[in-house]
Image 1: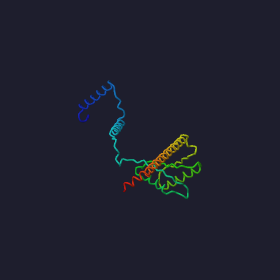
Image 2: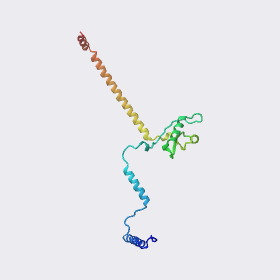
Image 3: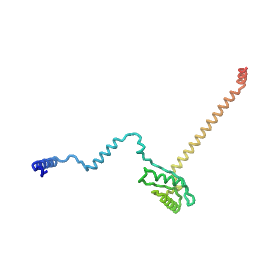
Image 4: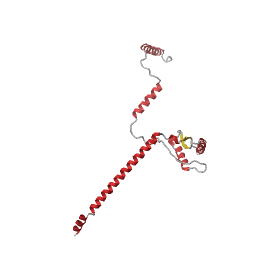
Length: 197
């Protein structure tokens, strides 16, 4: 600016200095914060306000896949369908970058569980599936009192329902017996014979 016209450059510097001193004298009443962070927050707020309560487009759908497999693990017996399902889950495009976690239910023997976990981890590694294997031990003592109570209540309700069904069957059989008795009554038989004549 000074090279082109030094008079205008001095005027611009003076105006800038005046504005600086005015703002310093009045004091800043608002803290604007970091500019980029504020821009990101306002963009996020705008995007959230624009979200509609419609079904998402199929290309934006991100499936959550839960595979429940029941298989017996041994060196001789290996269920290939289970491994095929795990391989399929690993090949989904949507899951790129996601971690696959495998939970296997084991026995009370920790050494056997560790052996099963290592074997399963090795086999999954051979299939080139990136997954974490966890063994879950289910003990008989883990059944809580609440579960026992709910099961007992359910059994009582089943018994009540069965008794109601039996009563309905008995009442229907009695009604059908009354109807058959009335239908086969002597008066009705003679009246039917008279109608035919």
